[in-house]
Length: 121
Image 1 (cartoon, helix red, strand yellow):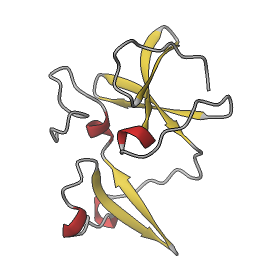
Image 2 (cartoon, one colour):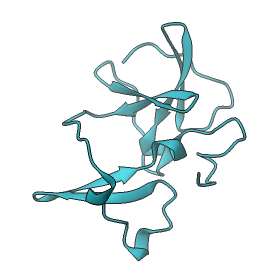
Image 3 (cartoon, helix red, strand yellow):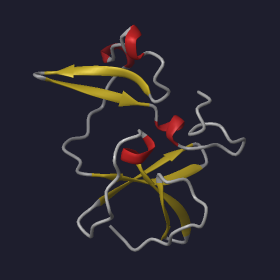
Image 4 (cartoon, rainbow, N blue to C red):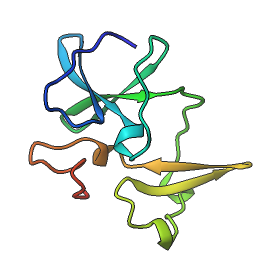
């Protein structure tokens, strides 16, 4: 975790902004974005920097256990009961766990205001 600057009137899932190599990045709390109880920032928290097209953001994560490279054929579509999730694009069963695959492009708003506001891209 690095020091971030709070942003007035930002959505509750945005902790603030950081400066990374001269680039201003929003810090997004996925817990709050997904409607869960957020947590207070801690020095041991990790930030995962993602870049989609021209957008870059820092996502607060608890930890990174592994990095997998998957093909589209390995993904299973979400069941009908959760197919309306605006972030979930599929799942990848691995041994005794299920890895949910989220659309990173839907986590970041584009210049037209799409993405986090619920409009799928």
